[in-house]
Image 1: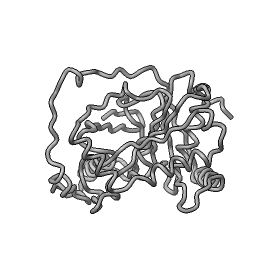
Image 2: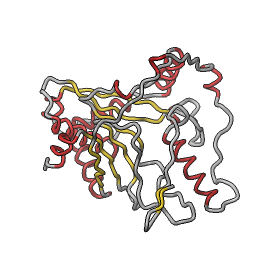
Image 3: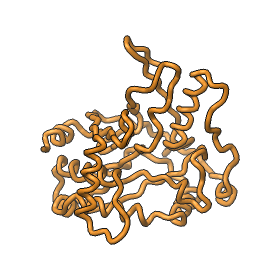
Image 4: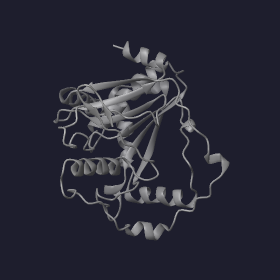
Length: 282
């Protein structure tokens, strides 16, 4: 808790090995309900492990020195870009108009991610033959068979990659990039999600932020998370910020805007010279 002259920051963190964003905000909002005086929480977490846990078996983890690296956050510049519901709708409509999709629709987040992927690639001034990627964090709960409820507490996510040459990405329009992201997401099924989990169990890898491709971006979090519903007894939240952990050049966190109705905030982390180029890109 950090008390300010005119408000309060409530901070909370846990290791990503314990839960994903859906679980984090479930905990955070439940915590606020109890602090505000409710006798019980409105949504109880799923305490029984689902069938897939029994089928995959336990995760065998053997510590080694390779897992003891401490990541040092580089010098970054962070900015929050506010997209009104009207701006989001215009960007989404433009992406769908320019795309060549025969069925389906590019989502708002896919369109915004494509916009940022192209803009950051331009700000980095990458060679035209340099491969660049956009990783999207996606949830598996609804894709599993049978689906897992929102109340499942743990990790049920993956990060899917779309790649292109920088010259091709910038030579095409917004719709082309958004369609590429859409097609990658569309290929993700319950079977592919399960295969991903099976690979994790068979060969556990400890994730190092230093592995991240410096020519790519990663879009995490989600504007669908319930971030402004919590009330610790002091009123509704005014702003959402993420902490210093898990930040690197090219990391984007998507939040819902404070005012309901489709507003989206993107928290963008870049090296200072890349951020300066991005901010001056009309």
